Length: 321
Image (cartoon, rainbow, N blue to C red; front, side, top):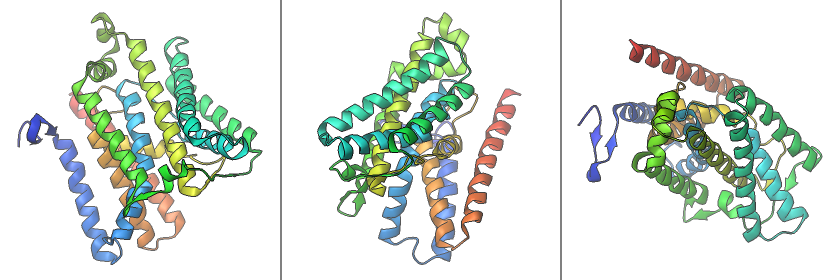
């Protein structure tokens, strides 16, 4: 143990907050394994990985924005819109998968840049800005589809619905995304700048950090990751629903907060976010295995959101003293 965390080979540190989340996840897993004989089956574990991959990827992008001092409420509907765009281009227009995939990621990045421009150049509040663009995304998805889901039959479906052995491809994609952003946030100047801007924007600006550039980068990354999740979701469902992704922004924010990301900005880790997303995934899976009615599942997830925000608020007040 070192500095309230666990020292790993190569000098990497698992912080005390992350160890706490891991302990909570372990306790939940033990509880579910005792009450359901199916929880520890390979099939169920792979299903959990497939389900929470989207939460984890979305939460990674959301954490980048929150760490920089912002918030994005449009990520769920943007994910749904990008899934619709992907399905429309491949199914209705017959575009090749090799061209559609990068184009969808670019579209997602451009939409993220649009959010970033409104926040940095126009000076709009991030909450209000992304609440507005959330509705724009939903409206565009309905406009493209006419309110009817589009059947998605493409090689791109392998990203969301394919397997390498027993392991879902979406889980492997999630691990690659997580590894990349752990390195970015811990080992690069861009990552350090992200924390500096979120901690104290004025001081960061006086230090020569291009604050607007950092915030724009976070929004573009979020847009790209939301587009990636849209492709994964369409592949999992084999269709693109104009209402797909709605509400996932709250799951992403909750996973980020559970993972130790402070809503006030300047604090958080991608490793913690992935653990937080896995906790959310295991919880949802456990509620299904315990055969709880759907309304109790919704109530439970809502309670977790409130507890996560309350904990973040309590921790912020304690650190301010």
